[in-house]
Amino acid sequence: MNLKYDKFSKSSILGFAKKLEGKSLEEVCDKEVLVHNYAGKGNFGQVLEKFYFLYEPNSDAKADFEEAGLELKSSPLKRLKNNHYRAKERLVLNIINYEEVVHQTFETSALWKKNAHLLLVFYLHEKEKNILEYRIKFVDEWSFPALDLEIIKQDWQTIQNKILQGKAHELSEGDTFYLGAVTKGSKGGNPRRQPYAKELAKQRAYSLKQGYVNHIIASISNEPSLYGKLIPRLEHEQKLSIEAVVLSKFSYFYEKSIEEILESFSLQMNQKSKNFYANLTKAILGIALNKEIEEFEKANIVVKTVRLKANNLPKEDISFPVFSYEAIVDENWEDSQIKETIEQKFFFVFFQFEGQQLILKKVKFWNMPYLDIQEVQKVWKQTQSLVKNGNIVKLIKKDRQGKERRYTNFPSKKFNHVAHIRPHARNAKDTFPLPVQDKVTQAKEYTKHCFWLNNSYVRESIYEEKSV
Image (cartoon, rainbow, N blue to C red; front, side):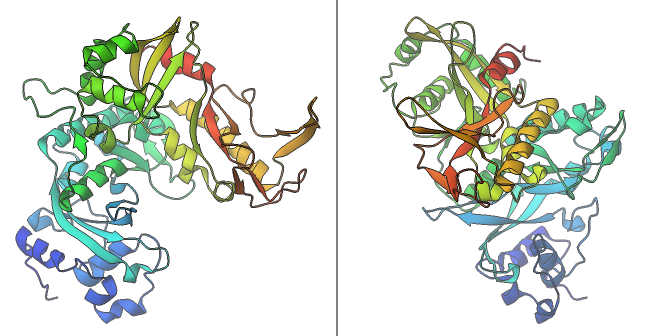
């Protein structure tokens, strides 16, 4: 087969790949592709490999262009209102072999051998089009900067350590910062054996988190930088983690009031503004207020500020984004919105009331333990069943003023100790459509609801739990 590039030359492969920019697969591939059934999800990469680069798609441990040391990866984009592009999803790399990874170092790992240098093809995903019509926007090579690579090495070590502990079945994307361990396979999870435990573990693959892929896109598309760095350079004699840097900066302000913290930076900020706590976090971390925290954005870290009462109980439960009733009935647990949300890494900032003042008590990086994720799954399953069967409302009562009040069957705090469902809307008229009409009210739409973490759970399992 006559290739139109030199498979031994990185520059030749990249030059040939660059011809894809601004084109669709049907414009650049042999017309033979049109008679094959490659229109399904995930097949963009297969068509690209087979009909443009002219090699058979495979799952080899070696890089796709082995002789040149390049691994080809394609990934979908979404376009924002400001016409910038962002990743539609994380970038999945190779499958984690639980039996083999425990005997590897990062430098000898299958991950590094295959993905040290990436050839990235980003295409715009548009619902109304099939994969052959998607427009390719960016093509470039990517090698990991030294700072990023150090964090990725630490992430890989975290994944390996969990497998060594016989906890491959407890792996979560929230365990790590840039490099994740995402479930890969069918609804059942393609169970795999692990070396140090009898329990089967779901098949997982290494992946670059969506936030990190956004950083790659911004870099290769030459977007102006919107980020400030926590770690501006790599100190070879002291390779600090993101967690260590953040905790060291915050610990200086423990037991200080908000007013004292602001005074130390000579800052005047409106404490009632929506972004006050986000800006206070940036100030403590040494990030300009008009910038985002680069390492947090890359790692998809969710920042939650919690105000505690004297008994350490949070003043409020912790809310998550509202869910669509129509979407939740079609979800399976592995791909559900709430599972993806709770498996992220969180950064909690705890303030406590002392009289009228709020005092900074502690901060903590946290991700939800495996057993607690299973508890949230029970809440999700019950909620899905209620919506699917039109059983949201239990009964309607009138209060003393004669106003009707609806009582729902949604899981309350009594359902389990981790999470519950309740409204998260401007008012009762702030609704989403229902896939099935509610039996009691005959309503075809219902007030927006979301998942909430119980404040008692936050106290006992996050604030009072000692960091390990």
